Length: 391
Ligand SMILES: *Cc1c(COP(=O)(O)O)cnc(C)c1O
Image 1 (cartoon, rainbow, N blue to C red):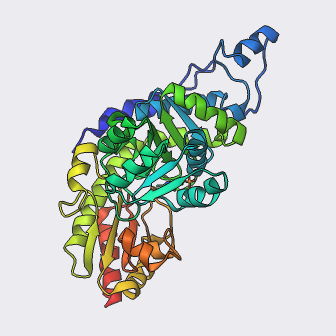
Image 2 (tube, rainbow, N blue to C red):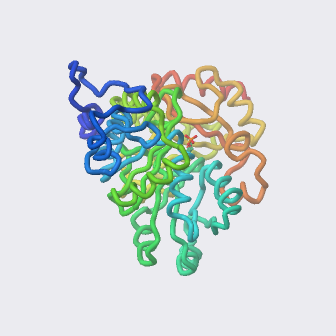
Image 3 (tube, helix red, strand yellow):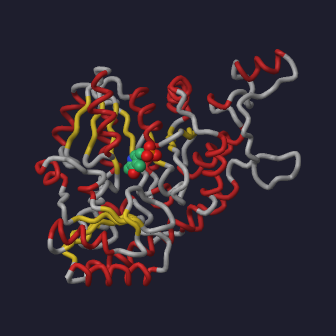
């Protein structure tokens, strides 16, 4: 579908600085503070006349800066900021730019819903949750002065796709800013900023980290907006640690390779599931049968490694299926080398009312799959034996 190799040089080289000892990459500075020749040199950095290392919580640490330059180039952004988690990135964004009101479109990550409906509310920030296609509702919120429109595409767990360009054009007519949670797609499959979004957000805990062994977040956008966000990040103390920054930067070197294989594996599994008699529906943007397929073709370079499917036989059959999988582990989260499966009703959507679930298109029969990097036939064989176990 696309030339994934075009990101590989950036993923490996961007952000690296000259090292006095000849390290091919910027080394890990697990340092909290940095020393100066004299007060003048110190003030040059403190007062912004010179770029330099100063204090790690400010993000002014060579390892963190090096990571952020690589992330910015991957997102084709003027600037990027790395955070201690995806939620740290989202909360800084919402506090910095959502004060006049935040509108969410479509399915939103559970942590984001909690932040907005519980905590932003306590700060008197107006938050509205709309269906993805509720254009009138969106215009109404924008007319009332909402300052930030936030959505995910593809969204969890139905992989619903939202037209980024269309939402950005409408929001910009009202001077609102648009943020896309690009966690599922990654910059390899989708470039929200080039489609008109003002902010690209990702939980780096997922595909960017890629090995289920680090927690981090990223926000990218214009230099002006990132400077404002950086003030919040610094004051809230949400900066990524140097150790995790270093680990994440290493993971980025293989991101294009991994995402290309996630894409390939997911399409193979989606096609296998779609023709299997034990499966009722498959939700994957790469399938012609998926409602978001046409928009995905317009705005994505690849369809990603996430898919969901409904098993025939309802909640009981779905539970039997995930409990019978041997290679594929039962766990929330996503984006690692290993395949993971869950029923959304037991994890991301646990305890939600029947009405909310029906509106979101989620039932007990649904299984969400983060397709890993294993040999595709091994994953298929695992499903074959699990489907036999249901019967
Ligand atoms: C995991 C996730 C988040 C939150 O990221 P953390 O790193 O867990 O804080 C936000 N959005 C999406 C779509 C996610 O999958």
